[in-house]
Structure formats: C-alpha cells, structure tokens
Image (cartoon, rainbow, N blue to C red):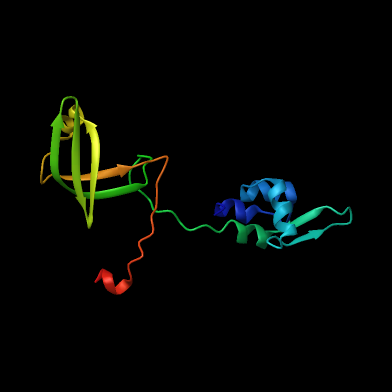
Length: 145
C-alpha cells in the first residue's frame, strides 16, 4: 500500500508514468491492463492517458505483512522446542518441534555450541529460501479431525 503521506499528496489524476511509478509497475503493464479492462483511464485533450487517484489506490491495495519484531530479514519464523541434536563432524542436524510441525535444520557444530542447543531448549527456526515447493493435500476436512 502506498504510504499515507504519498497518498495524501497525490494529485487527483496522474499521468501514466506517474501512476506506473506509484503502483510499482511499468507503463507497458498499465497499457496492457487498460486494454484488458483492469485499469480505467481518461484521455485528456492531447489524447494522453490519465489515471485517477482512486484507481491508483485500488491497484496498490496489498495485504498487510506481518511484522517480525526483530531486525532479521527472515519473515518465516517457527518458534518451537528442540527435540534432537545430532552432531557429526563439523555439521549438525537440529530438529525443532514448532506447533504441529517438525523442522530439521542442518547447521554447523559451532552454531549448536554457541546457541546452546539441546533437547528441550526453546528455539526459533528462521526460514529464508529461494525456493519453496507446495504440494496439494487432497484429504477432506473430515479426514483431518
């Protein structure tokens, strides 16, 4: 969502370039959206496209993101309890029970030592991945109970 300060100072109508910058997309994207009926524009006397403030506000509506409460960049946080620690050489596998989930992290032996990780210790798994895969679970709601 646009910052309130920006929205408050926004003109009633913006040029296509101004609207693209405010929304965070390219001018070409806005032209495609207009052709597809996703964007309402008005043409001025010189036949330039003008985008109304309400349209820009509508297109910048995004769900509020949760706050992490820390300066860490990881947004996916799973607080839980360490269930097991397996150290082998310089690496270790740490299993954390986070609610109904079991997460296994491969971390260094030094990290286990520095964090004081052991079964029963409260810890938070911070997940930042370049790839997350999703699979469909075809169970019905009644099967989950």
